[in-house]
Figure 1 (cartoon, helix red, strand yellow):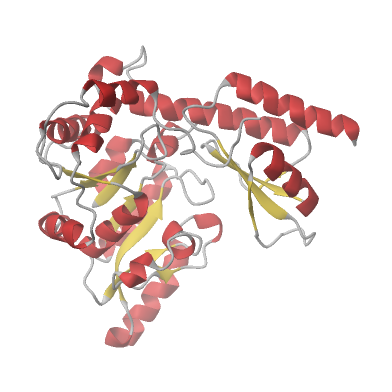
Figure 2: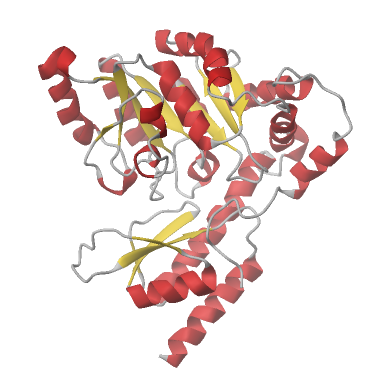
Length: 362
């Protein structure tokens, strides 16, 4: 039975794997100074419409978060983030270990809001140097619980930050899913226009590993981050000797020759497939009476289930079970399903048949 545990269980998309095999015997300089990394950076700058953006490649999402946050802030500053943001619940204190305190709001479902940040800002202003000073906003697109930000919501966050001279960092581990979510009006070009730093995740979108860290030189914090990142990357142990591997993969993902009839590069096509099948999965779950935690068109889908239902879904489909306060007071838990670039319509046929068979036996 196909598993929906995460979007990085499989290896690499065939086109990306072929590029790695084709370039395997090339000899290239180390640490990201090779022609493949340079060309991949050029392709990304063209894709986002920012010809002067700084682009570097790091192996994983947590290192990308550490580097973005430490490069944008002073030691006495911290990022404003949602209570359920990835750094607060899934990174084992990595940001705090790097010397930055997380300033978490009470926003639910991993979504950051102006209303949630305002009390933290007010407290920091009132307490002066007795309180960690907010230096930036952190949020992921999609959110930790699959929320897809609208352009208006994104702009509201950026406007609020600009009024207070705060940087904006968008964790894009699942950026491709967020951008390609059906009904979304937030484009990568618009994010690139306004964010100080964002990432384009590869690990969760068809690559073996890797995240592209994209920094804007338009703001003072962005320019300072660009100057600091090479040193911070080395100090953090994230300067990869075989950096060219990431360059090759991103080169393949944004290769103009891979564009389809709609003009989308491979990077976006992979996410479009994952999202399409995630929506089909959600429809199947809803048809069996399962209540979604939130309506989303990204590749992560979350449902309220009883513990017994959760145990079955985890065993059969690899659903990840999470403890969340049940608004219905029924003691339910949350089951997460994640589709990927490799999920097929046939996998969903199997999923729907298994759900129907279980329903018929009850």
